[in-house]
Image 1: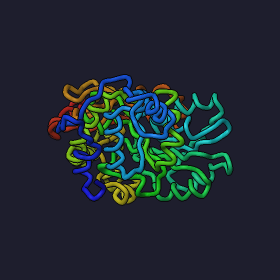
Image 2: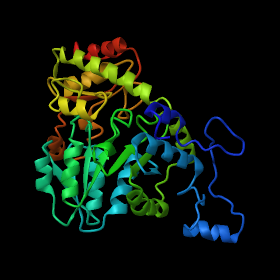
Image 3: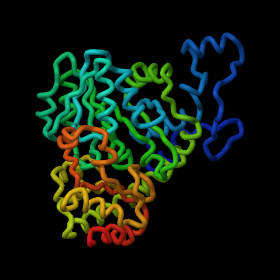
Length: 390
């Protein structure tokens, strides 16, 4: 189906009807699958023949999810995981060994920083790069040891944008792989593989679902890397996406394009409005000309995305006042929902990392992150204005 537009793929790709010819995707709630005979079972277990074996690593509904997402990202293969964090874990555990090295942007999700800290106990060391300049990444590479370059673009929560094509050159020059977390944009706005990335990770919990219902994750890329490097870890360790969650995510992806377009449009208008508010020190949104990487974002993204972060003058106390004054926007750290959400990153998503790591990532006490949903823009503005004007 690669000849079809991405919006068509989001609705149609990955569908394989059963003997009942159902129109909606089937939901296969089963732990295991039955074989016609012993020889067929042996062949499937050995990998000589395709077939579903056990839902820890093979399930038709999960396969449909993976095939649809792979079509959207232009990937050869996809493995689905229980969450976005387990997708990152699968990359590291499936592709690395003790003594190898990760170069990562310092502007990443707090839980990812914590995960890399856990992996350090097993001999996987991480160096954090504080700049958007590819030369800084090149300087951090350790010849013969660096296995992965890891980046979120746009980053969480400051929406820093990294040049995927340039980082791809750095990674490949060092014999490493470039892993891009595409959570903030989704394939509706950005396709990192087209720009030279080797692997994409997703928290499907966010925009792929789009309604805050289930957890899920995915790793996508070339078949050789995904199926020979990452799938064996998933098969054995079992950080598996459930069939029910895969079915929900399939339905969520059907509306991905129209949601991302609408939410990105509202986010741009909200960012412009926030720039005019006296209580706001600075606004971070890739769609604004004031964003340091605005030109780059407009080259490698279709739109600016639905995340707007901003600094409230005066630090934590006035920032918390804005949060507490909201009546409609949900106070929660999740994002990608049709419902707008607000969070104070320094005490939530990045609250468990060190103060030094927060400073390195630019997470200040006055910073707030809004994930713009599908409500009326006027209502979102009014909800924020209550605290900003107070």
